[in-house]
Image 1 (cartoon, rainbow, N blue to C red):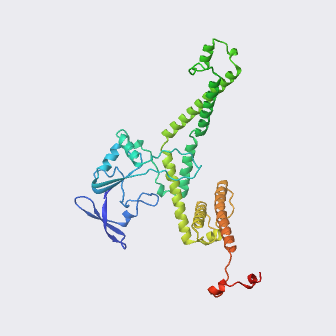
Image 2: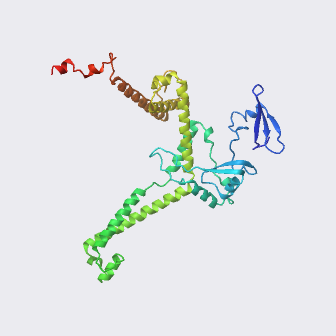
Length: 388
């Protein structure tokens, strides 16, 4: 066995805890992997020696030949890498482009929109990017998010947020208002200028045509309009320079956006998985805090979200109270803030439960009806109606 060896499992021995593999290659050699090799490198290390080979990296695929190839494109590939992937299959090669955008909470972070609108533009960009000058040390290293705990993912998210805070703020709305104000100032200035058949070149042109070299002879309205136009131009130029600095920062740190989205997506996945697990187990402290699992889809979703927050809080701060979901009141400010967020989620679920209970209580109850009347009886007037 060597690093990157691939094969097919041909036998399993649950008693001896061994796996028999038929390795790929011309020899088709069979090897038996013992339990010590399958268990990995130890508790402190996360890398496994044996894993599923349903996918491989582009660099490891060099030299492989398959009948079909499924290639994943993210927009960061180059023509050298892409040429290797497009030449692996004998019959069929399919490209799967990740075009996004990823869903994100509104107002959480001002992320740049760097996703390509379709797969064809991603493929064209990859074909136009030369990767011969890129070294391995130039590739930014990213942690394996699936192996990180919730606390580690939150720390990574906070680190990326601090890096995003260093970016110049987006002032595109102010720039749009400044551009509109500049146009209005130019129109007001044009109204004061004399009609000579062609638009004058500005304030100096008006002075030159009027034959006056002293600003005191300029009419007051024109002087005010000129001053307003100059201020509007200066403001617009200042905002455009700010937006250019922002665009430059985003271009230099374009990798932060995809990293942040992956971290947030992993956190959301862990939260959903934890909520589903709690729904299956239904510990007593969760049922005491949230009540039974609602039958509606929205109510069940909110219940799972609150249950996941309870579990994450208990795991993060080693809460072992079997009766109270959040345990005693903490003294640490950070823990108090996390406890408050979990408490808000619990109160939200409790409010929905009370609303649903009131809705069920106010529904009219239909009493048991007697035998159905015949058509003649239904058409006959009752005593009150007959009496007028």
